[in-house]
Image (cartoon, rainbow, N blue to C red; front, side, top):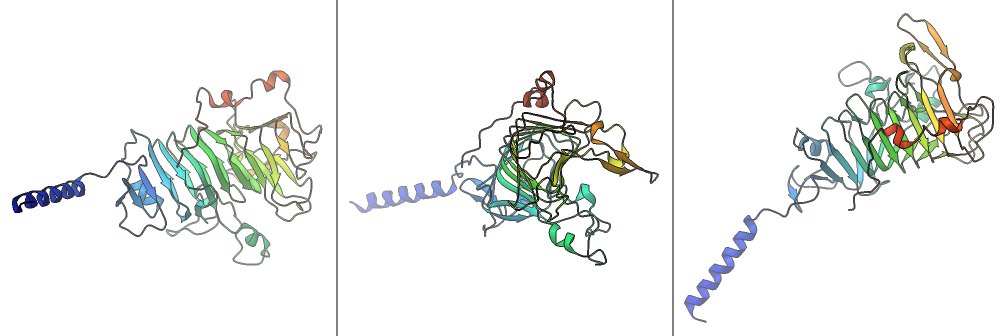
Length: 372
């Protein structure tokens, strides 16, 4: 090889290397990646995707208009963040359901950094206020230590009187929210679907008191609903507390789901399917909770449902009986499926009206989980 040829070869190699270095990285199918172990600068591109240590920063980095769906991959880890998603068409995909955990530990009676207390509505870990949200293969948790607080004597000044602690809230603006293979964990007031339509498919929802509550429309499709043990021999809680508006035909539909108990030793017949919630004694709330073809363990008993009291703006207290609400079953089975006059069943004609398609009204969410 002549000296001239050698120089030309070196120049060609150098030019190719420069071109590779300057070429944009290959686009990723992820709008962003969240990884608690990431040590670079927040938002740096790794394997074609902006990468962050926190979900909050990843959400801040998305385009504001939400014209296109944004899909965020969240790697295994615990992410202690209190977040509101206000951008439409966001999908969160976890790397592993039980090891990708969005968590916070606020309770209603705890003080906020800016004064006052969180209240139930402010205690959420994750709040959705935009349409077409989707979550797959992850855990949403409120980690407030409810059992320790409950065990404190009433004279203990550190005991919270208001121990409601929401993990997931679907608030005004949310609609067509879908959850596939997601765990939603808490104790009192775990899941608050308060607006729009929501679909939970093969999810786990765990709690003790009123742990699925609110005014929204939600389908629990082949889910596991886990009652956590409060250690009582008489009252271990209430599964639902719907506040469905009177003019809304559907509230919560549990479809081919399993109602289980956290511990085998949990006292039998100490949990009821629900009670009617009337926020601030609102007479226009008429809770709807219907269980169709569900398996029930023996923590549920013959009573089935319970009454609930609320106080109005004048301080007057009212009691609301379960018979006044839209509480029904059809096709229940298992040790907790006890025939009883207080557990009303749907007629054949009524049952035909309670299907996921009827509740979701023309929306057919995908059952497919995004591959990694």
